[in-house]
Image 1 (cartoon, rainbow, N blue to C red):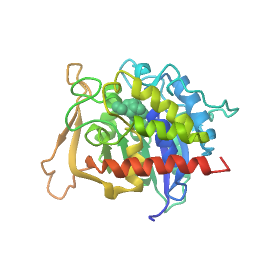
Image 2 (image 1 turned 180 degrees about the vertical axis):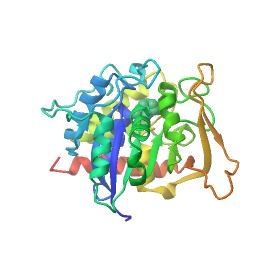
Image 3 (image 1 turned 30 degrees about the horizontal axis):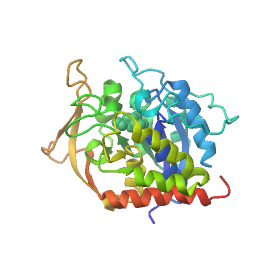
Image 4 (image 1 turned 45 degrees about the vertical axis):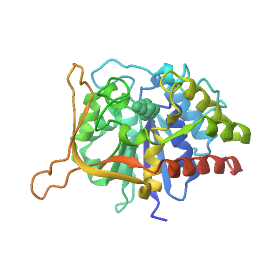
Length: 319
Ligand code: RIB
Ligand code: CA
């Protein structure tokens, strides 16, 4: 087992965000979750923040939650209720919680948690929603840069898209926020559609989760049912659990393949808005290409490790 990572998670829960949180909750030996920040994306900031609060408690994470950006840096917000439902979690209800978001906004919360770390410690940022908060953090608080080990992003694609033929949702939603991250020069791992569309769960997995009837697996099974029946997946064999690829990469890098590239975000307003242009050509002499773009995964291993993580939560008593 590697060393335990300090994690800050920025998310827009979101069905696949919720499943990603299951992986974090199932592996406290690998992740010390310093906090969760929310960003408008799959649903409004109010809904995704309420979802993060409920999931943090339900999964036994008990991590502080800080509310983030209500809209992208410049663009109008889009939601994805067709895929994630009116409440953002496939209209599956999680137990209410008395927990409230912390007083600090997401950017300040991330900055303060990072700067409070002991001098030798660093943080891994995991970003699985639009990159508004993370982009603003890197621009507004340059003092955090040297404390960031790497940034693992679910977003983008070297080819293709799921909002348009050229753009993936998290990048399309906030191209300017994404550009601030991809141009930061910090070590990035891009978990784009190239790899996330090979990392899914299917109807058999859904039945497994529902029949097991565990406290966590039943909820995940019900969300998966909504997700598989949604317009994006009803004609496909499996539904991509995009966001879980980030934590899965940190847990099992050996099941993934990728290439170092230079990635630029198209911030135009035309048909290529939000495209992540991936350039394999080597950078300037001596300058390492900043982005590891994941391109392939062992689909079966992903599925096995993910289900193992979810099932393990059913056994946990102290949730
Ligand atoms: O394109 C998939 C991404 O957009 C995922 O993060 C999903 O949760 C949505 O936010
Ligand atoms: Ca997400």
